[in-house]
Length: 99
Image (tube, rainbow, N blue to C red; front, side, top):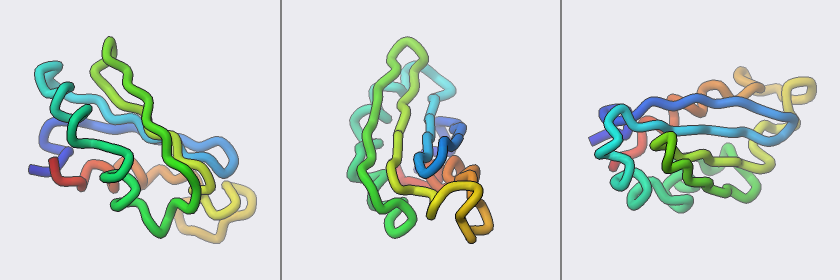
């Protein structure tokens, strides 16, 4: 199944860094995303968009994961020529990952 079947996401930016959070609808699914939504899975989905390191932070009390992606926005809002310089579409891309 796609991650979107069990979770929702939010994304944001700060300069060249993109931040994508994923939260499960049902807390019973949290363990599943911890096991399956690895840094490697996110790297595979986001390459070649993200050039830098991806770090995952677990938020067990919120039943979510936060991925911080360095060198992800082609220069950031004021420099990027991308259609989506804020990386807001990253929240949809992460939800397309198979879990």
